[in-house]
Image (cartoon, rainbow, N blue to C red; front, side, top):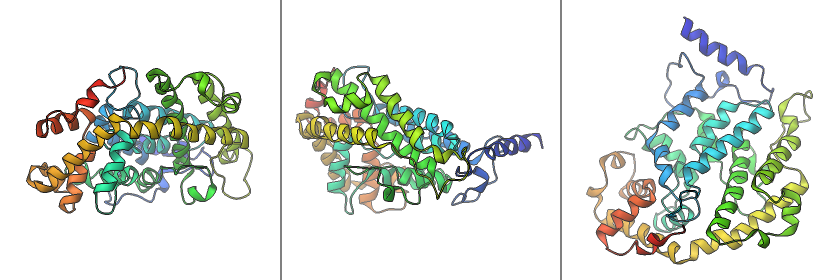
Length: 357
């Protein structure tokens, strides 16, 4: 009785959130019904399941932008995920929305990333019939891959947020792109951009790819000239321009959205375009990018020709050989993929062993 009362107390606290917030007791539920946790809400339970998953642990050795860096301070997919979670929690708390739901979506949003970042994703997308996308793979991991094919059985709201966090090039804040998303999922979607634009910029400085003097002045005049200032400008602007979502000023005229003001939105989109042109695309096309593609290509073709070499846990995940191979290869860390490829073709990973320091 006492333990049940704990969860009920936590759910009662959610009743003090915005009228636009997602409430765990109102969740659309799980694909496989379960008895609720006595100590945690449904969204808190999802957060814990993600953190304890194998896919989450592997994020620490997966590329964000710079492939297999030698330096200790480059962002990895795990540190990126933690930054997204922190930013999302800050915004959700400020807007009186469900912090637990935002945190769970943030922690799970990049579970499906391949080794070698978007280079690996692009190559696997080219090889796999039907294509490959990390957001869809993140959903596949929590639904079919983890726990030997049983999946994590997360709530609908967390799964939907994970599946829809990705953003196209250009202005990703068009309201039509967030239709049907909870406000918490919208927060993660925008927090992802805040996190990667800022930490990727620092990594580009660290790697000598960019200098601060190279940045467009009109962008820095709006966002700021220091890392902390830029993050604070973006987050504060999001809260200010999404305030109707808090419900603290009475009912809004229609359902609110999570967005930015015109000036910051324009500066963020300009910075994003600049990063694609000067960092993301050049890194994809460089010597290391080509080596990373060759490794993904070698591994995919090897395991397609020898499906018996794919671990059983991936062959039990409700798919054809191509799907099992994609699950296995995409789940590899950078260094595991390099070691495995080197055993098949010595020297193939050599260009990656002189990564940025």
